[in-house]
Amino acid sequence: MNTSQPAAPENLPDNLPERLADAGRELLAAAAALDEATHAAPSVLPGWNRAFVIAHVEGVARAMTRQVEYAARGEKIEFYDDGFDGRNRDIERRAQRPAAEQLEGLTDAVTGAVAVFAGVTGSEWDARIAYRDGTVRDGALALWRELVIHASDLDLGRTPLDWDTTFCHYLFGFLAARVPDGVALKLQPLGEQPRTLSNGPGTPARTIVVTGLLQDIAAWLAGRKPLGGLNATAAADGVALPELLPWPAAVAPRP
Image 1 (cartoon, one colour):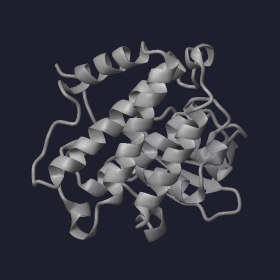
Image 2 (cartoon, one colour):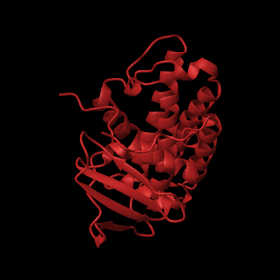
Image 3 (cartoon, one colour):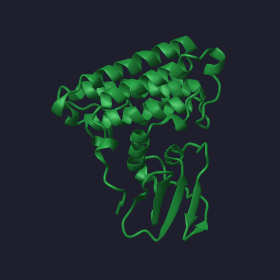
């Protein structure tokens, strides 16, 4: 059973093209400051430098553009050529490029993806794509996640504290799949109404209350470090934050 509250309309905004355009501009503005030295420096993601983050976002943007283009013809195509293995090879290859070439590729990919979604209208949002066996709208939401979160991962001035309220509430719903079985998470963003998430069958055996800034709770659910700290309690006693399940995978490794 998943007891997360139904997504409110503001949490699945109709103005996705505008949100994608804003997120794309913010990511590219942050990345524009990179030179050869800072380009190779570590990102917030363990084991990934900034070049790898940029290479990954470029790959996602190009893959999502292809999803929309095929959907417009009533066709589906694999998200990445050669699946997860192909994804990894492309990230490795792109990450070796000089900083200027990396930024050129990122700019081309992101602006192209933003443009293709800007052209989607009406029932085209419900056209089927191969990504998560979903729709064009699902693809737009996925690109929104990638642009916003990875702009923070670059560690170039943007942090999860810059994530807006709508994005954070959207993440709560999407990342309910990370809640451990048998646990209900009662999220209490400061100054806002609580929201309870659970995942799996049956009634959760334990409720953990997580209190803090909205952006810090969203960052923790997304596997990022809360900058302001969070407080967790169970039956009024202080407890550690639970270990979350893996991020909902879109492309699984091949056996």
